[in-house]
Amino acid sequence: MSLAGVELREFTRADGSFLTSWISGPAELMTWAGPAFTWPLDGPQIAQYAAESETPRRGSWMGVDSRTGQVVGHASVRVDADGVAGRLGRVLVAPQARGRGVGAGLLTQVLAVSFGARGLQRVELGVFSHNGSAVRLYERLGFQVERVLPDVEHVAGQSWSALQMCLAKADWAAALGQRHEAIES
Ligand SMILES: CC(C)(COP(=O)(O)OP(=O)(O)OC[C@H]1O[C@@H](n2cnc3c(N)ncnc32)[C@H](O)[C@@H]1OP(=O)(O)O)[C@@H](O)C(=O)NCCC(=O)NCCS
Picture 1: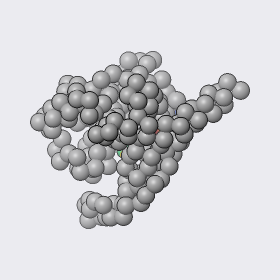
Picture 2: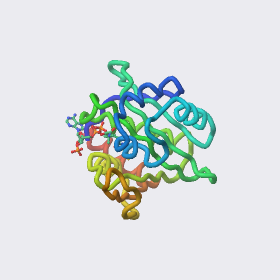
Picture 3: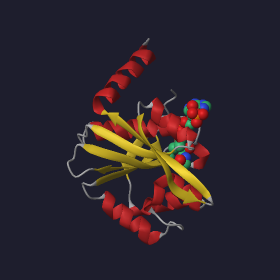
């Protein structure tokens, strides 16, 4: 797996302009975040999201290319009430930066923070089943499909199904160890 060097910094309200410039229509908005936002993604929705991201309930980050300093991605984890599990979502890579490992680099950092400093034991996510590059990205990171939810959304006359995927801390640590061994050998 190619891993672009990506560093995280906390998402702020001012970063909303990156999100709005990377999402160009209602189907892309649904693909990115499910029904959490309504099109068009506007200032009040961004402000609410940024405010929620400042609480212990949610962590949200921008990914920065460590070589160029360019902002290249975004992701967020909502922590469950028990603090044991979290839900990864809002994963987005700048359109011009896709297909070169930025998503993998970004999520590797997000998972390190989630299982490390934030102390989560399990990370879950939902992804539309036709979103092949996202599903493959999650599978490469060790996520496994737990459930298929048929026909969860209707977009532009089409019915979209979703996959619920999950990754336990122990499996993440084991996969990380194997990747390090592969790089060193
Ligand atoms: C899904 C998404 C986050 C993936 O981000 P990305 O940075 O393109 O992800 P990666 O580069 O790690 O992987 C994407 C592809 O590039 C390939 N790739 C990775 N590094 C590469 C490299 N150095 N050279 C060539 N190809 C490379 C991967 O193998 C992968 O191929 P695949 O899609 O055929 O499996 C991005 O497409 C996106 O933002 N989509 C819109 C929003 C969205 O769908 N979010 C997910 C919601 S659940």
